[in-house]
Length: 141
Image 1: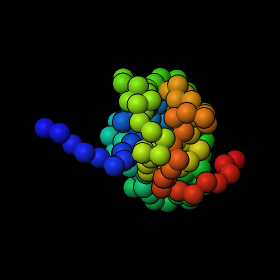
Image 2: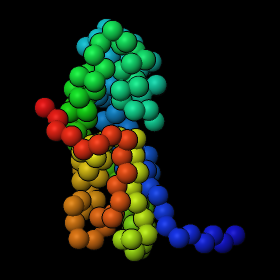
Image 3: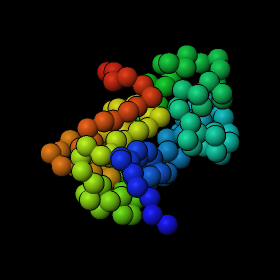
Image 4: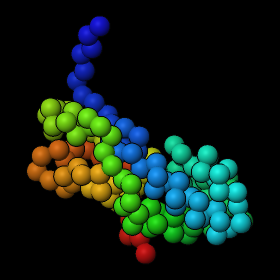
C-alpha cells in the first residue's frame, strides 16, 4: 500500500515525545494535594487538557489558577521525558515546510517537552513552521 501526503501533523505527547512518567508524577502530586484518588485522576488526565481534568475532579477550585500551577509543574519536570523511538529521524527526513506540530497543550509546555526530549527547539533545522496549540502563548507565574 502506498500513501501520498502533502504534509504531516504530529502530536507532541505520545507521538513525538513520551511524557508518560512526567504526566503521572505531576497528576499524582496534584491529586494528593487535593485529597483525590491519584490513580483515578491519572487515568482521566491522559489525552485531555489539564483544565478539563481540574474541572472534572475539583469543580470548587479556580480552574484557571489551578491550571497555571499544574502547567508550571509540568514545564519544570524534565525527568523521564524522551523522544519516541524514530521520531527525530523521521522529522529529519521531512522538509521543514511539510510538517506541523499540534497539541492540546500550550506552546510553552510543548516547547519544553520537545527540548527535554532532545529535539533541537528552537533550531534552524527541525523547527516546524507551524506549532498549533490549544491555548495562546502566555506568561506563567
